Length: 267
Image 1 (cartoon, rainbow, N blue to C red):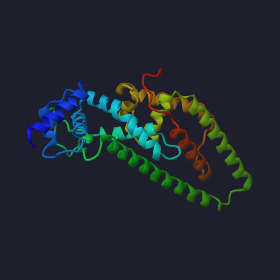
Image 2 (image 1 turned 120 degrees about the vertical axis):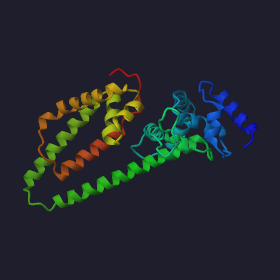
Image 3 (image 1 turned 90 degrees about the vertical axis):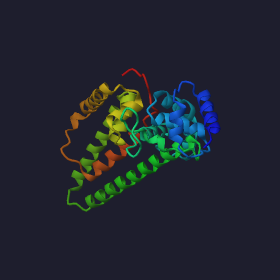
Image 4 (image 1 turned 180 degrees about the vertical axis):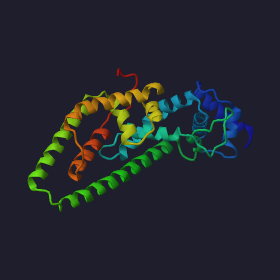
């Protein structure tokens, strides 16, 4: 690669993102021998891969709306484009253990695998769609298991009156859970949804929501305490397949309807 295109790409990227102070030397090393179709996008993703905070801020400011537009066109019922964007960013912020170590000994972020064959917004949208497909696959497996358990329950020897009472208790529990969930702040709803519903690590969920690392566990504990306090009256000792089916459907609906990522919200 001649120095001229590298300089042009570098100057164009720095003009576009003056706050991202990444050197032309690091940019050149990151490029290697490739000639990307979208060099400025490779610059900002490369800077982000080397943990420059201003690069992540720029990605959020310049690419988020386009990614959301693409996701809204394909999102399924119960999915939030904002949630998919956030989960995609979390995936791209994970460590790339196959990448060369940075000067401080840390691994680069996974976003560094982007090589500029397509626009960065398209790349992030593809990651987000994979998140959506993975979640859909997990829900199908879960519902299939619940359906199987429910069918087995239909052949049990429980008296009809006991089955009716069990269903009524489960319905009251679900109603109270919906009310208890609604009483939580949107931030705590989102934290529970990301950590318990989508399996995101506490630190990553806190980062997505703008919660300081040292308060994430406290916020989770407070949210769980509020829910337990409202639901303690039921004292359920076991879950029947019918109750489990109702509970899973309610939890999925509540967690998937959690609003967009909120920051600086009073908690």
